[in-house]
Length: 309
Ligand SMILES: [Zn+2]
Image (tube, rainbow, N blue to C red):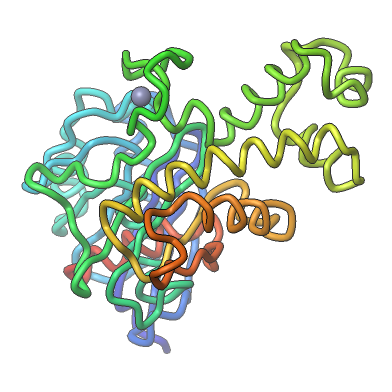
């Protein structure tokens, strides 16, 4: 019988996904259940997942929100059952086990660093592309959480103060241009200008254009879609340039929805990035790699959190 060494659960807006790891950090169990939209239901589901996975040590929880260093969840606007709910205490009481909680992208960074694309690296930035952009960073061989625990909110770096409004209240945040929804925004902008005719014809209406339409058409060689991908890559590179100028990492890991298509995205991002970084000709540029753990990174990171990362 393999002993359960660590248990972690990633709480997403629609699914909660838990993993059990053995002492070699191999996945030996998993369970995915829908995320209920009320706090009581959520505690039930998380308890069921933890009990199914077994073990008797601490349980790690990854959540899409701001988590203070002392483990208090401050804000999680996208998961109804987490809002205003002391989920960590409730689950700990229910399970009779310690529960540790942190931001999901911080934990994805820990997972990629320990068992994914960033193994052996001391200076690493993770940029997680979803509806928005989350992130995490490792420096001096340690995950960095900042003063409050909120470090890594790279998506809200303002890259164009005259740009589109962000749910955070600012204008022109990086994630308005360079996330999954950013790609859709850039595609609709191109369609408004009379470009992207093939996609528009297939989809029928500008408002219906999604990022995946552009990806599919670009994969088929559609020149106007490839031009949108190139614009997207330029915005990506702009943010990666800011991060590189500020943090000087050895490795940048891109995770999230686009990381299953590195052939389409990586070459143009690298090309724009090379030209954008300060003293780019005279320095060693960070490597850019796509994540290795896919959507499991948050849960694996949560399991690592239970071990004390
Ligand atoms: Zn913002």
